[in-house]
Image 1 (spheres, one colour):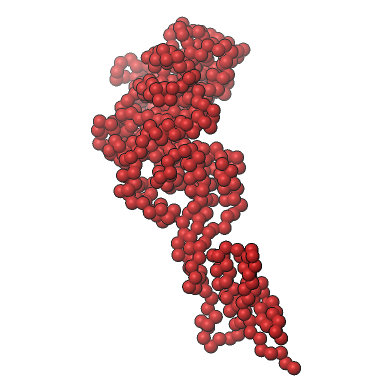
Image 2 (cartoon, rainbow, N blue to C red):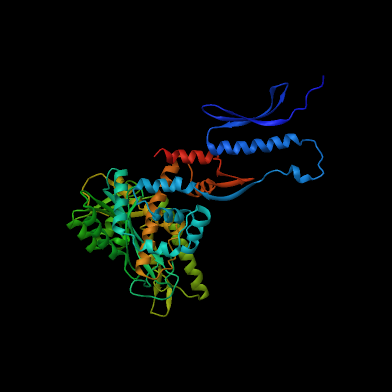
Length: 493
């Protein structure tokens, strides 16, 4: 007796924990399994499995058949209705929250500044097209105008202080940020530019970081302010604001002035600053150059209320000699060909204002005496703490790195704003972004991920919605191993 005609169908099996779909047919009253499609527990996944089961049933029914109308076997195609990146908020947003910053659109702006540092128009488009966040430029500006520098820097200070069990050693340095305009005003002034943009008006920004390089406060000044004049003002505001119990300030030679250091002495604040060895008094210079650094690489000289510590490095000596040789060779070439030279060059001897006599051999020989020497001035009285003082000063590179991150990674310059309040809000946004990026960098270093690599990886992590046939369902990206490793670093906090 021949088999009865059987028809394939989808069987849905429910249990307490899941719903399963199978494709099969009935033969003689019994179900014969042809294919197990899968099981799911979440409603959206169950619905997706059901659509998949129907499609696979269709493929099995019409397998190996030739159709008069080919569209009968046309497969459903999933259409992506919308999709946006969630990975950035899972990483940088997590750090922003961890630092204690307010839960408002500042978080979105900080994340955009870290991953896509562009103009406000470009930021609006990025937030909308890639993060699914709808903000108008007017709303962003209105919000930025409300930012409170004191509150946000206090939040930063509290976070850094708690993280590192207090702040007692701070580093201060300044940089210049120029504007894309030639117009000056009461705030934007032309001056000495560390960015070699003396043709543009600028402002000065002073930054404070702790011994690990975490920024916790900043200040800004008119563009023609001498950097040494920012030191006393910034430190005075800082100690009023945070009431430090014990404090040591580290700064480079540009901050060195009798007025600045006397102020710190009066306030009983320790300091370590770079020394300009060639500009000291003759009797001090004699003590500096007559010391046998080959025998003892560190030399200490007692000044009035200070200690001058000089460190010799053979590597630095070779570098100083090489740099001087380059300058001298370049000057020789210009003198021989009659090309113009800078009048203030220390290796030139001038007969009068207009005529060059020659290279000054005496000055060149005097300069050689300082090869390999680096000086530090401090008011600390602990004896035999040379290495600690030198190491602390060398940590100034952390401020320089913070400035590089702010200028390069966060595109803090050039500034296009004209109003002071907008310039201030731009600096605040970059400051908060810098702290978030610094902490993110520290966390990522445990698995040797960089900020750049993380932005690339987490930019592929997102969610959205698809339509299959008439069915809409949520969609989320599948995490690769890198994304899983990065999320594990941040979810542990």
